[in-house]
Image (cartoon, rainbow, N blue to C red; front, side, top):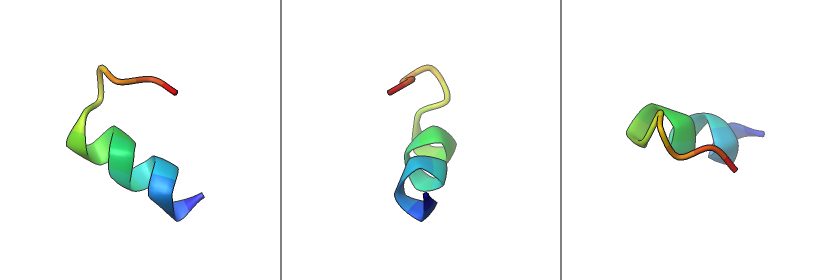
Amino acid sequence: MIKILLLLAIDPNNQL
């Protein structure tokens, strides 16, 4: 869950 938040924070356009 934390990893997804970090990914979104780094790249908002990159949706998993």
